[in-house]
Amino acid sequence: MRRVFRLILVLMLGYYIMQWWLNQQEELSTPAVKVSPPVKLQPSAPEPVHGSDLLVELDGIGPAYERALNALGIHTFAQLAVQNPDALAARLASVRITAARIKRDQWIEQAAARANLPVSTSSRWSANDGNSA
Image (cartoon, rainbow, N blue to C red; front, side, top):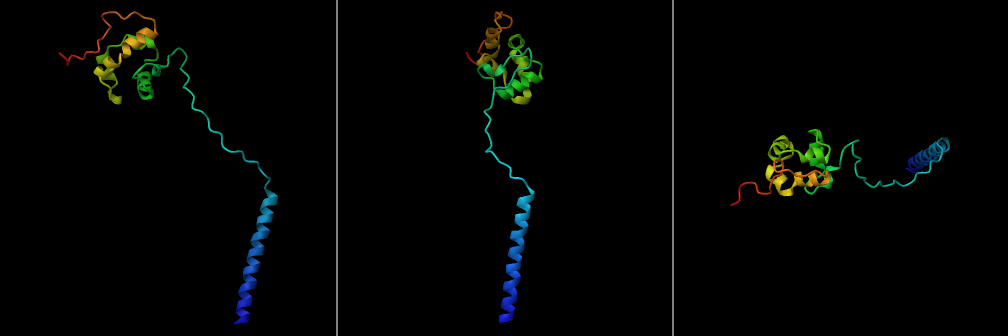
């Protein structure tokens, strides 16, 4: 019984010495690399495409609506200012926007003001969507 115990003890000791030696060899073969903690980058505002405006500056337009407008080719306040809310809502069906919301949030009027364009009677749309008395 003692012989079996000694055999197991010697085998375990040999195993741990071998593991220690392999770790020492591995540490010697790989140079020490100083690891700096990860740096958190502050999210910056997306840079506008050359000749475009940040449409998210308008009340009621978030990043998703801005991407959808850009996909339609509307990149500037002037381009948005000449749109018809009903037609624009139909073209923006993928982001679930209604003409009533475009009128209520006054996207067209805000864009015209930012583009320094007068809001003509043909392009001015009231916040009334026709449902109120």
